[in-house]
Length: 54
Image 1: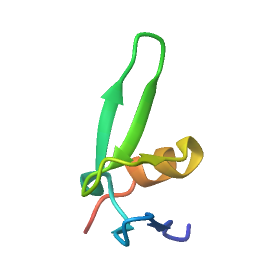
Image 2: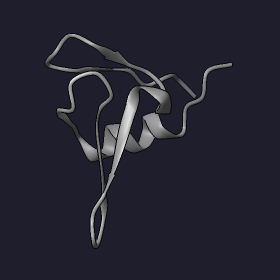
Image 3: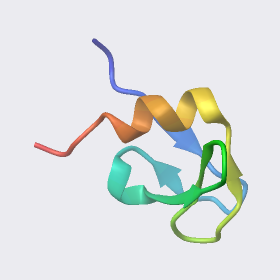
């Protein structure tokens, strides 16, 4: 499986769960960039959340 990466608007490259901030809502959860706090698209964030650095 290939590694997923996401380039945030702030310029940060997100690769792993550690690069994200989890925001829990009442009915769902959402992810944000760990550097700037901008929202990350849900599908991309879920893929990133399952990647761990080796």
